[in-house]
Image (cartoon, rainbow, N blue to C red; front, top):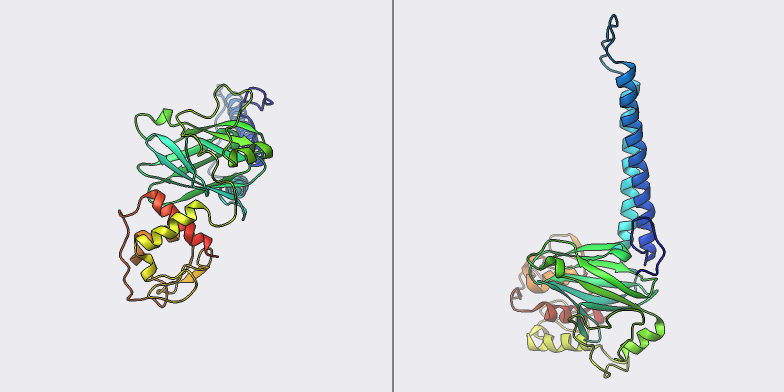
Length: 337
Ligand code: CUA
């Protein structure tokens, strides 16, 4: 990224969120410098002004209400501003706009695996189109990892047993380094990846299975990564391979005995239209059906019982499905709008 403008000590700003984080960062630096100078400056001034001199007796001061209110109120307001500002940018980092392109990310000791809707799975390289929102749905097969793209100012823990998400919209085409930012064992520092942001024509080529020549980059796709499956994935009509795999699994694992995909009521709730809906549980609580809810409902069905299905027992699938199979099942349920 040597051809990009220098931004203080910070890496390139390859998303809009990156620029917003940087403004926030410089605000924090500014506030810190201001108070450092104020506090240390006054301290030095007082040390000199009120130093011990013969014949001068110190005053005994027990308190000063106005001053105390002032130094409580100002930091409180300042910290609330910092909280609200940080929260607003954070929210835009983790919550994807609807219609974002989804890629599933699996962290494992010690590599990153990227799984696309069309069934392609790449190790180490994440190809994305520029100026397109991308949502990463991430999990880990072993320990805690953290997915970090410095150029995008995007970082999120990757946790075994649940999904976490981040979203970004790359604005600079080219290669962006990915790090693991959570110590995860011996080869933690080698748990690297690359985001390769492609211009629209390159992206279309890549989707058609063409190899992408990355001009100006030392090594083209191939840092331990499996090559994208050549051709084959052409037409966009019909279900994606991941959805098809999910549908097959539904039959193979016996799910279809109790769950329909057309809205009709069997022993359990139908999958149709369930994703994104809000369901009422037997105990009256309302739950939004997202990836994490579906994950729990498959692996540990007794954790939350949907109202009207009390007493219905579904076997837990904990330990019986791989992360890839689980991703396919969830993709299938999501496809049933
Ligand atoms: Cu994975 Cu550190």
